[in-house]
Length: 476
Ligand SMILES: [Zn+2]
Image 1 (tube, rainbow, N blue to C red):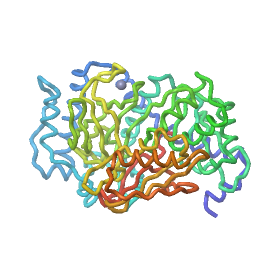
Image 2 (image 1 turned 90 degrees about the horizontal axis):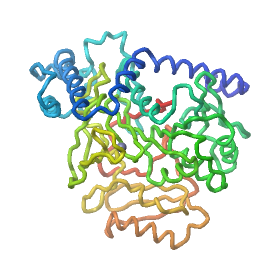
Image 3 (image 1 turned 60 degrees about the vertical axis):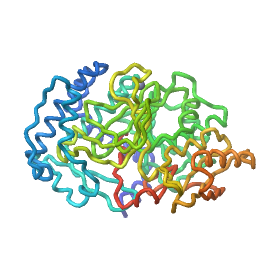
Image 4 (image 1 turned 120 degrees about the vertical axis):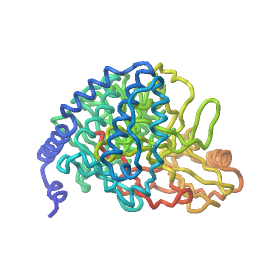
């Protein structure tokens, strides 16, 4: 019998002991003295003027670049000169160092991952990365306990800004199988008593079971909520339909993780839980961190890395394109100018929230999240098509070839011919009249093997031969 089968047979109280033990182990691995030190340092920098952030960024970048040229075979072979961590204009110093390196493609990393290993990190300090590629084979990844601590410092600076503290009571909607699949009555959740965390099962959220979840939202202790936005959204819709939104002040904030937050998620969730969503963009390569603000934008955590945008679209207001990321926290496998496969839109204006530093209007996720039109245009953010469609429970767009898309819709009661015409109009507005659109009504939309929901899946833009390495439930 495997451990899952044994767990399923345990009484609930013993399952909760197992959840508590696992939670204690996670806590000890993440919230180390290096975490405390890093959090203290970046909280002291919080709100510093841009020049100060650039100077700090330049020091860390020069340190990374010099370690790379001395200790990482892939970079050592380039014969680069010593980099100096000072400059009259730090922003120019950063650009000069980055400009000395070629772009690192996923292909190059996949072909020879060990050539990116830093030899000054002893093997016993290396941790092997867990990758959850949805396509192709997974890539190995190495990091250290310090990398993990720095990632969590970025996560917790955001959380503490909005009033959440470590070990505050919280709800988690993650991929963990905490409730046996066969369970047919509540509770569909288990408690990790050490962290005061209630872990909700994503695999029991059927219409028949949702009222039990709605009840739990009103009664169990909570300060903040974290997890997959598609699941939190499902629950938000159930709360609104039952006329049971939360009272303002019960939940301080919602922190989505692992999946992209879609346009139609945000409004429903913020209404049902009477609070704000603070999104975050991170990757399991520890290569970039961006954190949400009250204006709904993403601020680059400049202490952890530098991001360049390869412009495919540029206006007076923004520049959009593939992201090239350079993370300072992954000391074991340094990625410099890594084309991570995500696309983002950087604003050319200061954020209305008042925080200084680089700000992104969105990060759209993977290249595979783009629909390619017959005339070769790349269209992102297709989830906006369904933003105003309250008659649609869920929707997904699939594309196998450039000439056609298939749109799967899980309809609600009021989804009629007029609503369908609205959807078609929104699609045509973005994709044009040439592409063939096949609209199908379905009972449900299957999740990916890792439990995640994907709004768009296209095989056209780039053959999905590369593993996509994502953050997988690390926020919990
Ligand atoms: Zn902002």
